[in-house]
Length: 440
Image 1 (cartoon, helix red, strand yellow):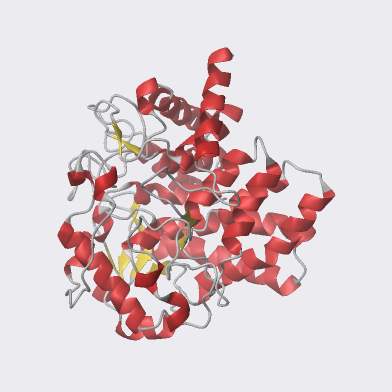
Image 2 (cartoon, helix red, strand yellow; image 1 turned 120 degrees about the vertical axis):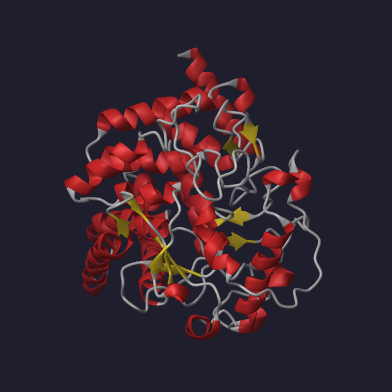
């Protein structure tokens, strides 16, 4: 018990050190601002110790929501200038009147874990004042979901389109290699990277050629003034994201469950139910590969063809509540098979970001192999909600074995063979997932 309490205290200390007052930066130096889906995980962890602060994390993020409903992937901390690209590169409020002038934000999004975080907070509190705050936040969540299933799925395929690898949260994954290869880089204004100076081995980060493409896509979005209809006309990177879509289904289910207390418009409930059906059908009809038994992303520039790589995103259907039992069982078998958590060379039975041996795999590179605790948390949650309690417990325990070692240091991600900590230490969402796992 004392060992567990010590680890809880250490997790809370990471979150305390990274606390900016109204939000939490993901890491002490590498990520000095507020990141969208990081804050959702952080709120889930904080819900076990401080419900007021957990909700404040999300309220701060949604105070930067655009008028069109999008929630930006970064809300910039004006006290920090040691990050690139900063608000001057994005120029959001100068180019699009829907963007807030203050706080400054980026112009892209990240996976919508937020409603799940709000539901976690709501389930733990009977406080009337806090529940009134949730009722105020709820319409903003609806607007966020509406943006995703309208502006980001105009084809009504049930799969959300991303405009940039950074939107997926799995920034440098082999998922994006083929679509990025078709992007012709134009004139990118001069820049100095700052991410590589915060890690011990710069080769773990995206290459310079990859970074040039990332920044060229930002320039293309700026040319379109972040207007979704313009982006769809001219933009060179449009990918239907299986993981993003499955996370939407998970959070949208939570939204539906909260409606009768916090919702006010019956038409919103009807819309959310339609969105839920559309995403489930979209995953099964367009994304699911019966051959690979994985959900694959679709490259819209190639006629919505499936992108044939094996990554953690392929397991994402397990996140969808009420998934067909046959498909659910196939995903569970994949999670623990020799490609993923059951790989013979891995010291810890955790889900890798990219399966060893697949195209684009690299054992230490950002999203190209190493294991990420929040992704494992998502799949633990998905297993649990779809009735696979034994398998969920096994995945949780394997992750805690990896993370409870002193040398793990609440790392950003971990090498697969021996569990070496990589990226930034004292990562907030790693500490938050530990808090949630230990509370369970």
